[in-house]
Length: 184
Image (cartoon, rainbow, N blue to C red; front, side, top):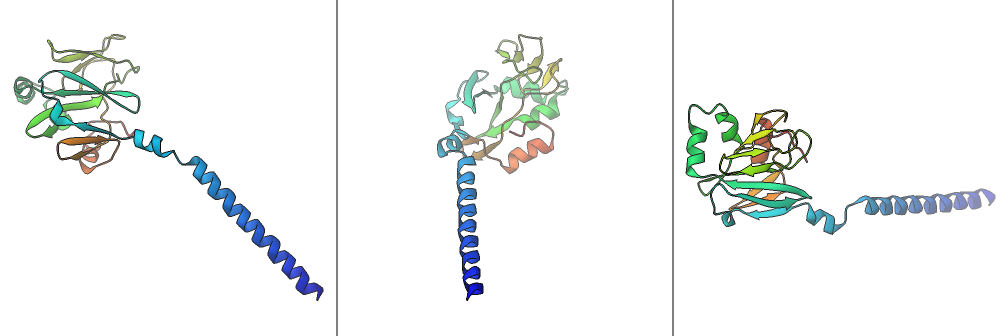
């Protein structure tokens, strides 16, 4: 009889300990998961049809970072396609095409030290005020010390909209072709 009682007490203790451990792990996981409001803040939807002016810098916000958007003018596209443009391949890879328009969409932070460059529409370029790095209208470096062009955030195209923060084959293609080093 003592053996049966011992077995019962051991089984009861083991069951209570197992339930307690599972409840503790579940609570820890729920605590580690981001809140729904935080998850929702990770995505930003951009309606690209509202960016109508050519060669105008639009600034949106995504995860606390400035997002630069420029709808390229026909003159900019022609210059980009010219044989004298040494950045032609990179510029073309970095463009996002929506309804026949070329767009620059990138994180507007200098890749040198994290400053926010100024856009100069008269010169079709960006100038970082801190150390003089320059970027062309496609976000490629034209004057160091910046080590690479502007990073492009992960995005997914949904008709005329871009959802920032979602991965897509188009974004993976940009990473594969080294048009961006950002993996945020």
